[in-house]
Image 1 (cartoon, rainbow, N blue to C red):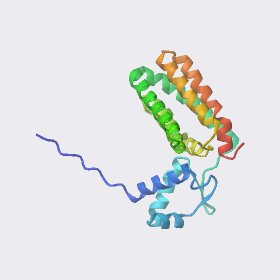
Image 2 (cartoon, one colour):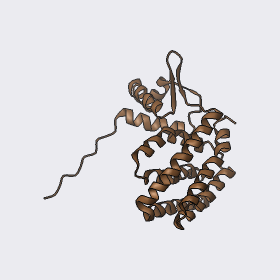
Image 3 (cartoon, rainbow, N blue to C red):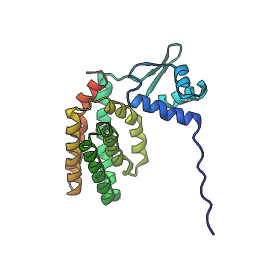
Image 4 (cartoon, rainbow, N blue to C red):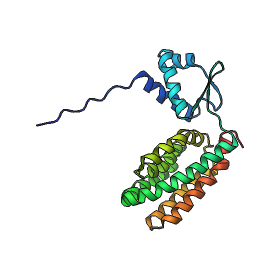
Amino acid sequence: MKTATKIERPKSLTDIAVERIRAAIVEGKLGLGGQISEAALALELGISKTPVREALLRLKADGLVDIHPQRGTYVFSVGREDVLQICRFREILEAAALGEALAADRKGLIAALEQNLRTMKEAQRAGVARAVPALDAEFHGIIMQRSCNTYLRDAYRLVEHKINALRWRLPVNSEQIEHCQANHAIIVKQIREGRLGQAQTILKRHIHDTQDAYLQAGGAA
């Protein structure tokens, strides 16, 4: 007996608004610290203010939006201390996640990371510079998702979208991007050779080294 094909529920207007507004913030179409107009967003998206308002509340939970009663709604902004704490937070979480991901499925982790490296090289050769932020996010996301630890993953979501927004604001020809790709390759090499401690150390150093670039990207330098 054939089982019925599962019917996918269509996305709600709020879900669509969340995706579109999040992308606008992350990709820099809405500037950091800038005020957000519910009416303007509703007009642009062709929907009423209600799903836009609900979407902004969700994005506030993601850390991408600050809502101030009587003052308005703004895209998040970051200060120097924010960036330093976010990077330190990432060092702790990603190093722990790497250890768990290796224990859970070493071959699967290596295969996924190596595929990411190949895709990033292809994007660079093809001159598709704007694919790099998403691929950088994917590399780190692979480590988190394969850790099989829901608490680590939930904790990472506290900063994930903010980091993506800062990645997108790095200059296309940034030396940090080339440095990032080189570090990713070294991390994968250490994992492949079974040197977990060394891979974790390099991963932490790699995240620490992004601080200055992110400070400049977020206007907090």
